[in-house]
Image (cartoon, rainbow, N blue to C red):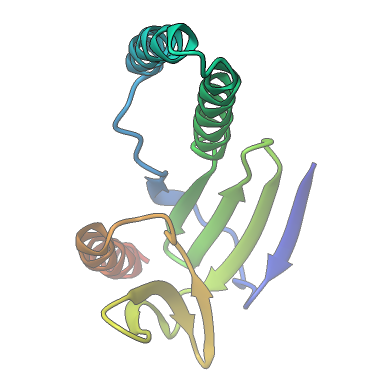
Length: 167
């Protein structure tokens, strides 16, 4: 089911000029995760066996618990990687579609007047990438690393300007 919230309604519908999709980066593939878990499991069994032979048999349970916690953390991480944000850029504005890890979509529409992507400084060196429309600001790409945020900001602004010029 799709929910819609409009920051500023475009006066008429225009064709989509460009689509930018943002998603969290995951450097470890599913196969890599399986290999990592097998290696750590083998190490845990070897170390646990050593402790068992020394008479410290309860260590085996804790090593198994560590593997279970590691497995659960990776599963949560992979689930969260299913989230994404799509920016549909058209001559009259932009539609932001946020897709949750469960697949639920939330759509926000912005008119092209006054619309810009900006990097907003926060405490420390962290910057927030946001769509700014008049005085409203909507954070996007929170999961992106700082270098990517700067590239995406420039790309969004270029594409918005190109779509406006086609109007």
